[in-house]
Image 1 (cartoon, rainbow, N blue to C red):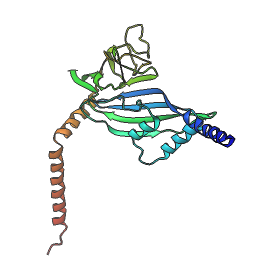
Image 2 (cartoon, rainbow, N blue to C red):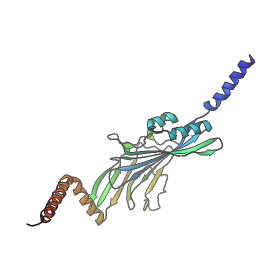
Image 3 (cartoon, rainbow, N blue to C red):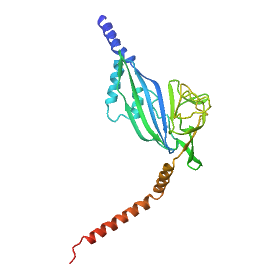
Length: 257
């Protein structure tokens, strides 16, 4: 009987560390870098808390695993927060990269970060409002955060950052960002990074800004658009020129009789 009791106690001691081993997502930082076109680069950093040596070892094994997919990490971490929080409903992301970071131990626990980066198309709509002036409006339908009774919102342990090109002029912004504070003139002159913190409602999110091109940028943009439209014709022309030049040198290099 005593042997049975000791066996049960030993089994409980072996099970307890496993039962109390867990991994929590403690913070989500989502940054959207808005470029000169309608495509944005998204970088998301998820902070993790690993409760014990057991969870640390499990994380390290998963980190060393080959071909562990995003869905595989979702199952390994037992979380629904490991998703792309910026998504275009009509298209897929591109250039996806996933990097589970190393563990920093704190006693028997540990902390780590997972970084995701990807590109999302049509993240803004663009219209020319004057010569060399373009108005960009952020499409709030790309948000993929939590849904509350009042609509979509940031999680309590979350942060959203929008980065616009240097020299841009902010036209409208709602809700007002937690960072930076609005100037006494009532605008955001020279500011390029805007952040919203814990639980911010996003159901009526508005963000628009104007980018003024320089003359050099306008010229590059013009020839870039020509290259896009006449790409096939241009390559065909270059091929023909190469063939003509090659034929000329072939003919002129033959020894005369």
